[in-house]
Image 1 (tube, rainbow, N blue to C red):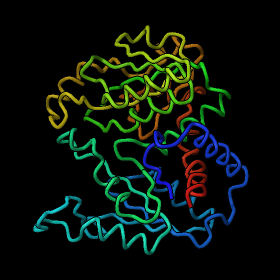
Image 2 (cartoon, rainbow, N blue to C red):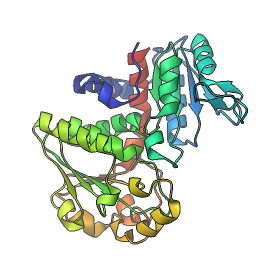
Image 3 (cartoon, helix red, strand yellow):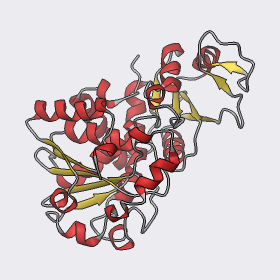
Length: 330
C-alpha cells in the first residue's frame, strides 16, 4: 500500500508512469478500472475543480465516490491525541480513518492550513493523521502541498513542449487581496525542479520566501538533474527568456497568522500582476495558473484570454491524472 501525500515520496519515473497512463485514459476515458472500488473524499475546505474532476473521473472508471464534509454533512473530527474531547468535535480521527477504511478502498483529503501558526500547520496534521490510522491508501487533494495539481501541470507542459529538461521555468508571486495557502507554490517548485527545468522563483522580498523545506527540495532536485535554481526580486530579469510562467499568490511566512500585517505588505506589490508586457519579455513563453484566479488582480484579461494561456488545459488534465493515479494505488 502506498499513499499519495507528496510527490517527494515518488520517483520521477513513478510519476512519469502516472502521466503516461493519464494520456492513455484521456484518449479512452471510459474503462471499468475502478469497478467495485469506493473512494471516500473528505472536504474540510471548498472545492470546485478538485471535487468535480475526482467525482467525474471515478464515475468514468466505474467506481463510487463518497463525498463528506466534516462539520457540515458529517461529524466534526478531533485530531489531537490525549485530549479531553469537550469541544465541537464529535469523534476522533483514529475511529474515522479506521471505519472509513473498512468501507472504502481509498480515502482522499482536502484540508487547508488554519493560518495561525506555520510551525504547527507545516506538520500537515489532518492528512498525516489519516495516513497514520488508515489501512487503505490516502490521497492528498490539497493541504500544504497540492500533488494532484503538480501532475496536471506537468502533463500540460509535456503536451505542449515534449521533453521539459532544460526549459526555463518561472514561478512568480502575484498580488491577492488576502493571504493564501502556499500549497501550489510549494508544489510548483518541487515538480518543476524534479522534471529537470531551470527554475526561478520571483517574489517581492525575502519575507515572501517559501518554507526552507521546499527551497531545499528545489535546490537538491536541480542539482540532481543538472539544472539551476534561482530566487529573484527583479521582475524584468526574472521574466526574461522564460519558456513557462506559473503564477500564484501566497502569504508571507514571516507574518503568518497576522492578516493585517500581511495585507499591508501585499498592497505595495500590486505591480506583480501578470500582464502582456511581462509576457513579452519571455521566450514566446506560456502562462498557467492552478485556478481559481481573480482576473485583473493576479493576471490581466489579455493574458488569460491569450493563446499562450494553458490554465484551462491544466484544469482539464486534473481529471486524467487523478484517474491514472487511482488506478496505480488501488
